[in-house]
Image 1 (cartoon, rainbow, N blue to C red):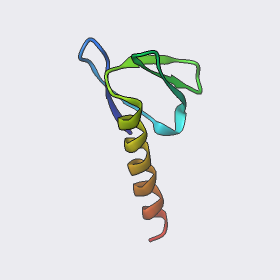
Image 2 (cartoon, rainbow, N blue to C red):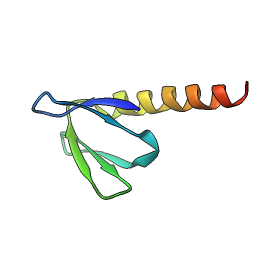
Image 3 (cartoon, rainbow, N blue to C red):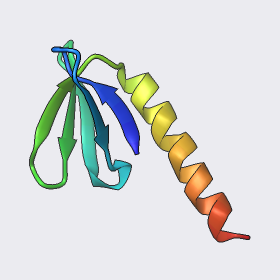
Length: 64
């Protein structure tokens, strides 16, 4: 799960498999495959790094 922060300070957890795309407008907007959008404080770089770490962790567990 991705731990993200909304602009009001609320912490949310997002399933990275549901992320359709990320935009900086200049704020970061996360759009899910469901059509739901979130405005978050984290940068696209930070979110994409979190997604890579998550995927590595998931796929490394499958190999065992």
